[in-house]
Length: 217
Image (cartoon, rainbow, N blue to C red; front, side, top):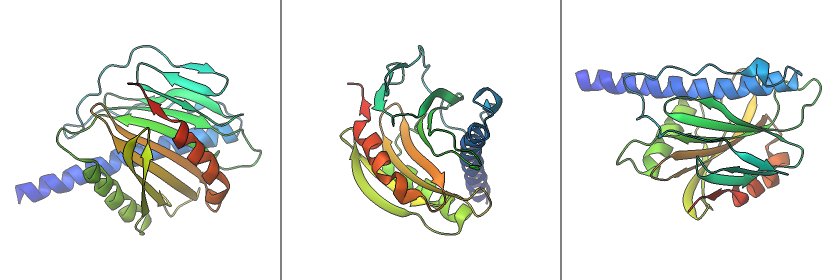
């Protein structure tokens, strides 16, 4: 019985953390689309719980941006983001994760700006990629009421699983495509979030982003 209760509590903790991340990115995107700018959208990092993932290794230094090439040596990756988009380094940073967000240009009247979020979250030792994918699949299914479509591809030479889904049932309605892959340091998530019905308009752009993503040797 105790094991069952602890598993249920762990599931609640995971869902809470996942929903917090989604809410933060959506709120930031909404603030940008309304002309509020990034300062008004600064998120507050959640406190790690006793069941949270291990602490992420310290991240020192800041990324450099040359034209549309984004290099973050301290986190160990570089990527080319779409022309005209705006990078916000470490839009959310906690003891267990770092999220960099790339925003599309603001459009007047848009509820949410399309954005790509690159997340590095500390992994749990001994957990394979499929374990994280199953965790996310269950959460998405519970929140949206529908299982995500899954695909497999390579990102920076690593095996990745791509989940295609609609995050929730309440406005603003969104479409999300998320690539998950694993290294010793991070559970990596690269996710594009767009207004519902616009996924196809951004697919080529997202494919280019994934193809340009490179982990440092």
